[in-house]
Image 1: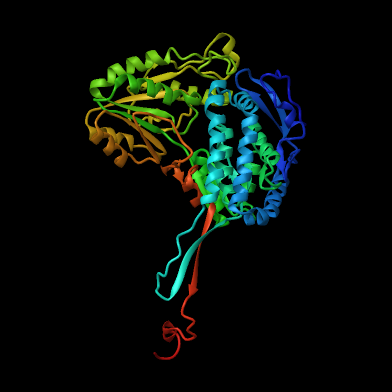
Image 2: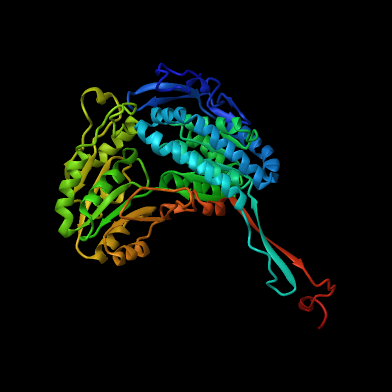
Length: 511
């Protein structure tokens, strides 16, 4: 079954592009073979916008076979040829930017201004970056390190990469998975979240229309249990890259380890937001609200734990609550909307459960409720500020993944940094101070893959993204991501033309 639903054309202008199915294999859309269907639901209204047949194991096998067939020629393409293809790809995505933005907002519920100004431009920038980076995929310079030999290092593609992307930033996560892999000469099978497959499919179609060969990029849209686990365990998949929760990441690692695959994991986060007593309070308040509420808080780098030094604590709580109360909830497609719904009613209820349980041990300063009226049918939840929770409480230690910020006080700098590090996660953090020595210490001692100073959230294509501790390992974006997607080969040439080498005596004969 493949039906577009009754969504108005202005909300979903690319609807006709999905008429043939939600699996993209060897350059064309096909129907899934699992025998089960799934609906993409607009979380702002609860209405089904597209129903499709889910992928099963046979679809995964077909996608992997297509990627495997395409690999030799794509791997043999010159860096310049791959670069040119990626530049064409960027141009096609730019031409279709509005289609991407509207599809992303429709399936995720994020405000159209976020899709237009963050998700889509960021993705185009990623493509352009990797188009350039494809020409700079160099190994170590040649040298005579042993004296009698010349050595150099080759970087070679790994093969078929099986990637799994989450539902919070489906377009950007598809790009982060696909681009470094194919720029390095690999081919890809991507499984997007079944809740949000639309922009991943548009992305693959754009790549084909730009001239990237069939089979280089394949999309299988199915459940994690069926399609995802089959992809990770597939014997012809040489590497797995997964972004999602730490709990699911552990399962992915278990399956990948059984077949000795290369593994890249970008997992959960619980980012601390450390405000020292000399910080610009207004800047910190604005940064906290923006950093906590971006994408309705469904961001693994979102500000979730604000630690505020005691002299600023009360004012920070008061001003942050007041600013949160000005944030406008509404239809993601309406011009005045600041915050859309969560991705689903199930996710909204999960977030609400954290807040309701917290009422027993902490103070809900503002929010903590679903809106009434026209918004009641959507998966909306008001921006929420919680104060006076204990460090070992659930809302401080667990990833909520919603528009919820928890604020705790601290006294000394030592205590603030210790609290920042006191969760299993280490993906991102920020520190707020006018003192360069304080901020320098924070960058050194906070255990996170990214530490912002006097800001929180911005990312750029040139810099890596990835975590410490239970937030996983490996990097997305930047030239550092090539470390995940290339094999390193040492090549050594004898320079002496001597038949009997001096070291041979260790095996036979004398000097």
